[in-house]
Picture 1: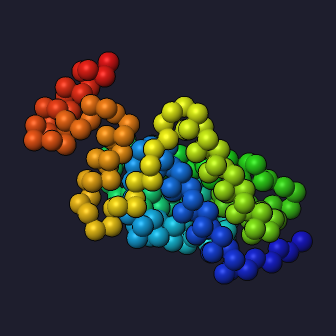
Picture 2: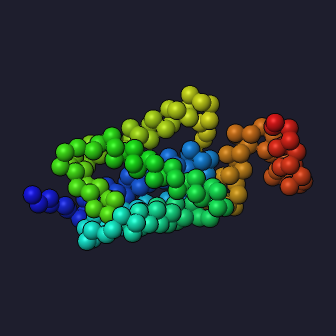
Picture 3: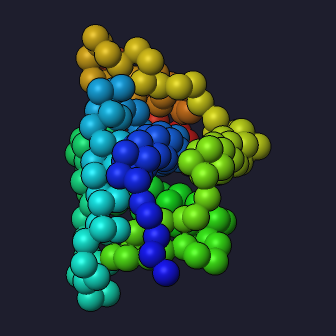
Length: 194
């Protein structure tokens, strides 16, 4: 059986899904990104979905491609956040993608190089993406970790400002880390938080 895949729909849907999951991964990790960086990361996610059209690769190569493309999407959206934070962002991005794929895996789904084409309408796929992101928001709200959208003021300001607002919102003593004492305040914050 042949499956007809419209390239424009594949790219557009994966762009929107990639943007939503990059934002959700950032929310889970407490990371912020600028809107233009988000567009770059979502664009990388859309382009990486073209692996569905490539010849089938062996599992190790497909797994390496999937991990590398996810890391590149995260790096395009968030930049280098340090090894641990970048790995966490990448892991959440991959897990959110797998959650959506597992929730919608239907008979007739096409899989090639660990990229999935699900036989559902783009509207249902986008609604399901919104549902996965809504669950993330709800869980964080119930756990008391919900914070303000932090990339709204990132365009024109210094790069540290959104992170500063986010940390001040989440940790009451984090303001000292950004004050005149800088590093000394951060060390004092860690000691008092325990």
